[in-house]
Image (cartoon, rainbow, N blue to C red; front, side):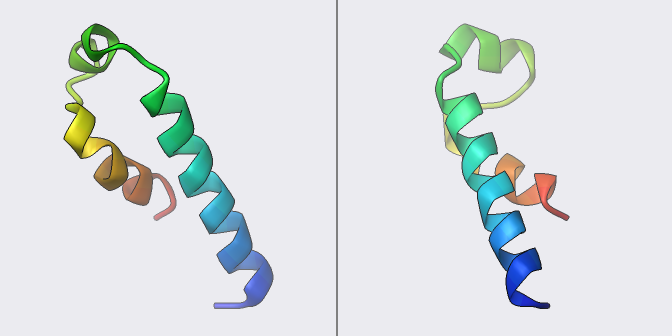
Length: 47
């Protein structure tokens, strides 16, 4: 994997974590996501 792609994936991961982290527990629950699941969901977003 080249450097540009790695950086792009890292940015997408961080953006996803940030956006989900700003959501309330109620909003996350509506999506079927627990707060502890955020890193997993963010990793899945870059696959």
